[in-house]
Image: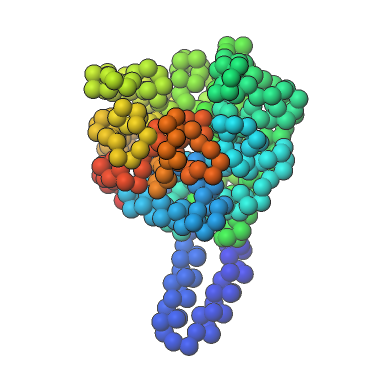
Length: 445
């Protein structure tokens, strides 16, 4: 590949100048590592393939990875340590936010990658490059989502604010409600300046060359999938036509810029489509959508709550399996893989710290992962999970309400949620060992 030529010449000259065999060996190892290309993830029928072998996985959501990489050396060291830990448990598939928009509101990610429309924080672009380079070294795969339906990273609502629609009605702030936010945000899909700005953002990111590897993002097999957005949602029946038009146009744009890598939408399944799986299907008929996604939140949906965990765990598991079955049946009908790319469960008593009990969560996760083993055995459509989310070595600031403030550690929970609520920390060894066992069972180690 042409992009490797300058780096190869530099390394080869270093090899030639070395005066002893150990130095030669080290330089040659560096050369080999530099040139090693991750195997491309593709889709054949209802299965993913890593090279020539089926690819089933238990991965993680790790939205803040590029933010760690953009920080000082301590942030980079934490990132490398966490990637090494994830890899050791077979967790090689990470779902990641490309970057936030705005960065000026409370309860949102700060700093933002796109701090003004069309203007980018160079340190955060560098962080994204560094993050992808570190993943590439470890033969890991990124699902990169380009936008967000929700306020916590700016997202679609921020584009509206930039284009004259007024202040974003952030539901966590006094005087605003979730219905107000949803009514505001659905305007994005009929706001031409907003959609044009987002298209420009897609072109900018996908046209980027990584400063650490010299490889274009569209040539880098570290990318498993470009994902349109986190949970793009149909908010009302009247919204369906505008949403579907926008979704198809965005998918087609991404595919036109990169026909090598996979395209996914980031949709939640029926839960994000008025609880109508037929509506979810109607909005996902584009053949350029390579696979389906679904999300599941038993606590948010009232299936599971503090004080009744033991009583409700079995009921939540039954409902979860039914939800998954409905979507895997649809995936089989459409002959596509499907990934549960978000799900989570709180720790005991909704505690926020690593020393709290995770036994119920482990039981619930194991019940879900057993479905993946079955799918792997029978070559079915359920192809992977990305739990939400990996908190790594992050530490809570200890505020009683768990609120995130600038300067606090980044963890799995975004800024609008109590920090630690859905985290799988590096010290949650029972959870991580169980995940490793399932990755072994599906041939991903």
